[in-house]
Length: 378
View 1: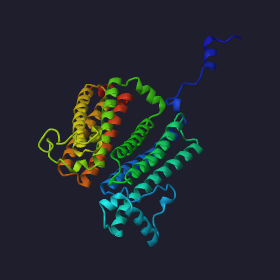
View 2: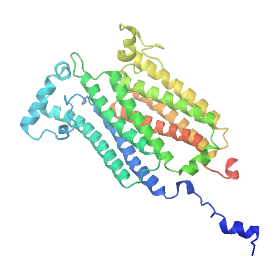
View 3: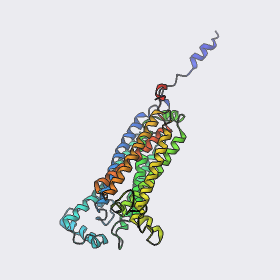
View 4: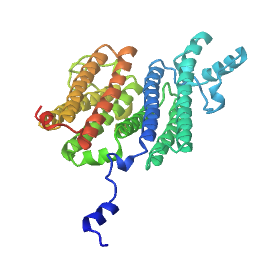
C-alpha cells in the first residue's frame, strides 16, 4: 500500500532545534571558567593596588634578588634578616637616600615587597591549578584553550618584566627603578586585567547568543570605544611615568604649572627624549594634556552614543562619561595635594574602573543585549 507524501515526511523529519543548541551541554564549562576568571580578576586588581603601594612606600628595591621558588620563604632567623639587610645596604638607594635606616624600618619595606611578590605567586598558582583542573575535567569551552593559556603566558612574562624593572634600580646612581620599565610593568598588568574582563563578559552569554547579538551591533560605536580604550591605556602608561619619578609631587598648582601653561625647563635634559621619561615637569604636563584629550574625546563619544537605540549600550557609555569626569577631578585633586599615597592609590584604582567600563561599553556595542520594542524607545 502506498503512503501519502505527508506520511513519508512526518516519519523522517528531524526533531525541532532547541534554543541554545549550538552550545548545548557546554554551559557548565562556561560558567566554571567564568567564575575562575572572576577570581583571577579580583586578584589582579589587588595586585595592581599592592604594586602601587609598594612604589609609593619606596619598598620595591628592598629585595635585591629574583628567586621565583626559594624567594617565597621570608627570612626566618636573625641571621637571615641581617643578610637581607646587608644586601640592601649595598645598593644606591640605601647609600644615597636611606643611610642610617634601622633593621626595623627595613623590615617594613621588605614585607611590602615580599607581599607583592608573594601575591604574584598566588596568582600564578590560581591560574595553573584552575587551567589544569578545567582541562582535566574537560570543562574548557571549545576555542578557549589558547585564550586561557595566553593569560598564563602573560602572567609569566609579567614576573620576568617585574625583575627587569627592579634590576634597573640596583644599578649605580639609581634611587628608583627606571620609569619606562615601571610603565611597561603596569601596562602589562592592565592588559592582563582587560583580557580577563573581556573574557568574563564573553562567557556571560553562550556562543549562539553572541552570534545573534553581533548582527545588531554598532560597528561605529565599537570603533569609537576602541579609540577611548587606546587613549585610556596611553594615559595609564604616562601615569606610570609620573609615579616612577614622583612627578605628581611637584607643580601642584592647577590649571597652570608654576604659573605658566608649560612648566619651566621643560626640555632642559640632553638628549631631548630623556625629558619625556625623566623630567618631572614634562612628564606631568603630558599626563595633564592627554587627560584633557581623553575627557574631551570620551564626552564626544558619549554624545554620539546618546543617539543609539540600544538602551543598555547607551547606559554603558553614560557610565564611561561619569567615570571620565570623576577620574579627571580626582587627578586634579591628587596633584594639588602633592599626591599623598591614599589619593594616588585611589586615582590608580579609578583607572581600573575606567578601563572596565570602557571595555563594557565596547562589548555592548559589539554584542548588544536584546531589548523589546518598548525598550528601544527609552
